[in-house]
Image 1: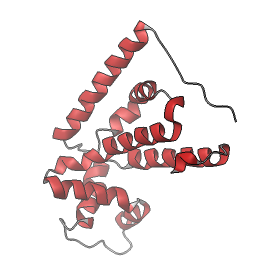
Image 2: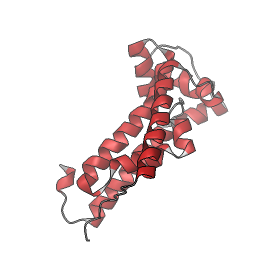
Image 3: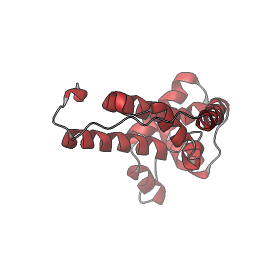
Length: 170
């Protein structure tokens, strides 16, 4: 398989769009530090389950309730990390920090897996321009966490199958 060519754009409008998008996305991430996203999902089952996993809240689920089935369907690692952030910092807003962490992890993984063949700056700008990514990056939903690590797993599988050189693994 031939190496992937690096994506290069060198124009003033592109750089202006990059700075504007990056600035808005950075403001969104700073917003995460001080504000708890009041969404129904976060308040009713993501946050209580995250706090239960680390021992902050003590309650039992009613057997056969639809709430129990929603919790079983979600990956427990994301909720555990949310609860751990709250327990360590003492701030309920820290539950929202899981999504910026997932984005940072995905960018680190992209850099590690593709080295010089991908322009991370352009990738970050294109991802920040997607409204759902901007919305989820400041919420307590675990959808972005799951999506970022699913994307990393798909990239890993593509690299494993598509290349004969597996030095990127170690």
